[in-house]
Image 1 (cartoon, one colour):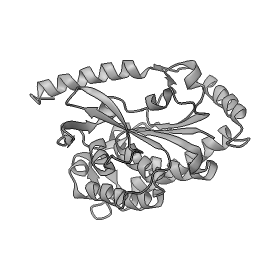
Image 2: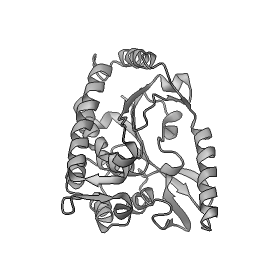
Image 3: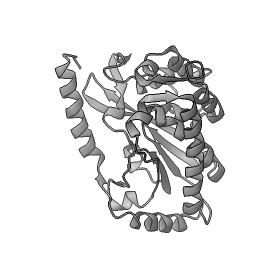
Image 4: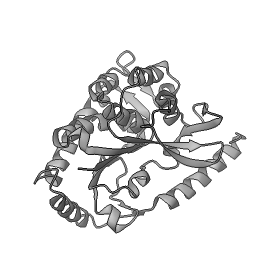
Length: 283
């Protein structure tokens, strides 16, 4: 089987993904997921998954703000704790089980880059650091003369690296309260969408609370297990059944927005460039 996985950015809501990854592991063997694409905090969770460290990631999330009770995103982004997580995940250069794309804003060349970390010559730690280097909160991470930031500001649901891959289907986890149609019908009809809509999206994203993180991990597991139980009811290898279930699920959602990566990138790159210019930051 050739299955894809997409993890969007979501700041504190990335805790949902840890629970979701635990649920996915109960349905799909890790060796059958051949291509993973992630943005922002999803990169750290996805990297933990492809290196067989989801349990370690869960422990890190659950203990992230145990001492303070809660903390906010600007403190997290500048904290030693975040860098410690990256170090612990990347130490000993663990082998990756799949092609693994991290989404980056190349500030030097004013473009978006999807970097495959499943390449021996790359230093995973540097690219993991760049993946959570938020513009206006962090300095860029410079790698081989190129300045990189978190690419989620341009493409927060990075399905594009999977677009031309011949995958049986894709599991896409994101936090928008929208059932998107990704790229085109042919591609979208192969995507199992796992969403976590919320009435307090902004607050959930920027505030890290111990009790909220515990709840999000548990809810992420339960919701993903519920969705996959339906989508993979006849087994994860029964591709025709999976396609049928995806089609039926998408039909039930009357309001679907077309999301084309090229359009999203142009719009968001223009926005972020204007913000840099207003703050007199040179790209």
